[in-house]
Length: 229
Length: 229
DNA sequence: AGCGGTCTACTTGTATACTAGTGCGCATGC
DNA sequence: GCATGCGCACTAGTATACAAGTAGACCGCT
Image 1: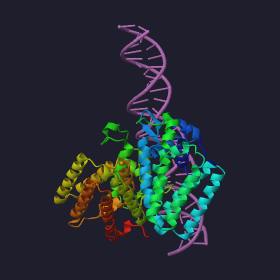
Image 2 (image 1 turned 90 degrees about the horizontal axis):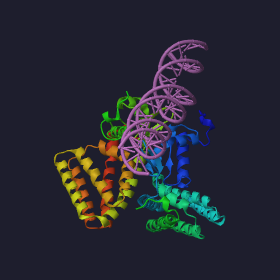
Image 3 (image 1 turned 30 degrees about the vertical axis):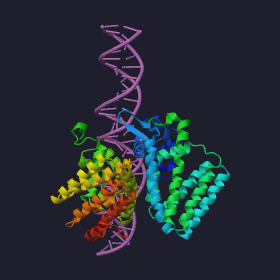
Image 4 (image 1 turned 180 degrees about the vertical axis):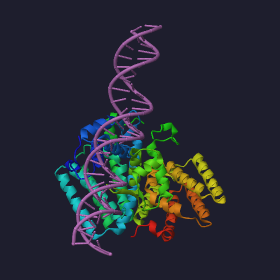
């Protein structure tokens, strides 16, 4: 079982790879909400020992994606309205604060990079590549946070965003949905380019709340994934 | 060395106690910035094994209070202007968003509890009990976040706040400083009680920025604690 | 048949053993 | 005396062993 580090795919340590793998599995609902996990099973499946698995699970617990019950088991948390509301609140607070600064500090070079991202989003839309769009979406929001000088805003928002990410990944986008998202992105970016913090914040807040509108749809499609409130 | 759990003071697991103990030691500068830590030494000192120590250190790394360098050592981070700015940004974003909701949702019962806290703050000021004031200060901010319905705002703000906490704890308050703080607290609470989100946010933002004014003082007193920028 | 106690198999929490790698010091050669 | 190279002691990362506790199945009793 002792595998040299160099044989492991990816650059990071075992703990980080376990974290990424399990998080992706949870967010994509490959590990469905409510499912019971076992540190031993995960360790076997990923070819590592329990130690890095445990450290990864602790991080996921901080994100409320798993619940660890001593002497009983570890479970994928059910999607909860409270957790979704908290995630939305945190993300809105952090990103909207960040974008105000971004609007004041944006440089032409950065804006050019962002424009290229928007073009790529449209290409992903044309090709119907939903996964590529998600990656570009994240990259755009991250870039906007970077512009504020507080990259930590994105890191925290992302970490708080687990429950919302699950909703996003579960949703099968209706035709035209991506186009709508891109239009909102453009509106936000335009306000930043104009150096208008108030408008940028308003547009972003509107944009961030669009995702919430999908929650009820997903809830209807997968009631067993949700916590009863 | 195998100590039964019941013999350990406090209610939490070993990992949590290690976390609290080490965090307190760092924030109070008992473990001074730049100091090298050793998992083995900490484990011996606290009477536990390396495992819970490691898990605690990972959490502290997330808060940027320690830096873990593989195969080399773990170090208490130097206080950094960037980290302070990030902490202030995050705290301002989260708490100011929360207090807007708090101003809309505050109940008479909660306001009464907050008033009692303010009275206790004044008693602490009279008695010159700075530690008690810090506890009450935290309790007040936490309560205001709770009122918003997003307790997570306080949890995240606190976790992001490590570098600022160190500054706060290092500062020897000048006479009248606590009185000023209490006056600002009263102004914030009054705006919340009036149900005025805009004023509450403005007052809180002003209040949160006061702590920053102490940074340069501390930097002059302990230049070796700071990262050169 | 229905109920109750025990026992097993599994869980996480903690402790310890081992691996790979780094820096520092000391000894050796110049 | 000084520079260089080797070795030791210590580090964090990972693997494994042990401890404590829970749920559920199963067997015996009423």
